[in-house]
Amino acid sequence: MIHPDSTRPHFSIGLTGGIGSGKSAVADLFAQRGAAIIDTDLIAHALTAPGGAAIAAIRAAFGEAFITAEGALNRAAMREKVFTDPAARQTLEAILHPQIREQTEVAASMASGPYRIFVVPLLVESKNWRQRVDRVLVVDCSESLQLKRVMQRNQLSAPQVQAIMNSQASRADRLAAADDIVSNENGFETLEIEVERLHRLYLSLAGKK
Image (tube, rainbow, N blue to C red; front, side, top):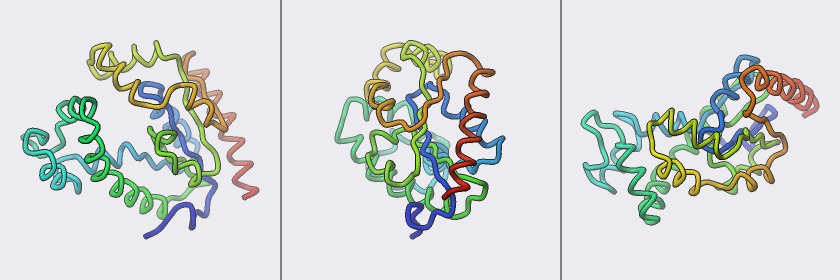
């Protein structure tokens, strides 16, 4: 198995942020500048899509109620289950995390570009990503803005979104773990300026690696 931390030919950044902070928008801006993006959330979605590699194990562990008619993970049912049952969360993580890591390593071994960005929503919570990347980049915004964005995007109630936020690392913990911070409070133009600044920094640091 290929491990990014032992074979990485490029400078690597771990990009994280709370739900609704704008991680995907930031990753897209870096991709436009040539960075190789490895999104663990997209990998997880592929594993739990119809025919995904994790579906059989999820069906065996949780039953048909957690699989849709199309053969994908029933995300709404699983979200409710894991937020009220810590043992269920551990079971799901035991299924998904090894497969996500394996697919992440495969993607990393094939990546090209001046540097690589691993998009990891739970980077701070996972504890082991800090050692696998050169820098941690946190996309930050106020908790009230997170709440508003996720309610609009996912059609969830305020208590549902707050429960998700409470299950993640706090804003303070994420900021404490950051080498670099992008503020996503003030619109796309400001965000693009911040990404361009960091892109130039990462090109410089990658050249010295």
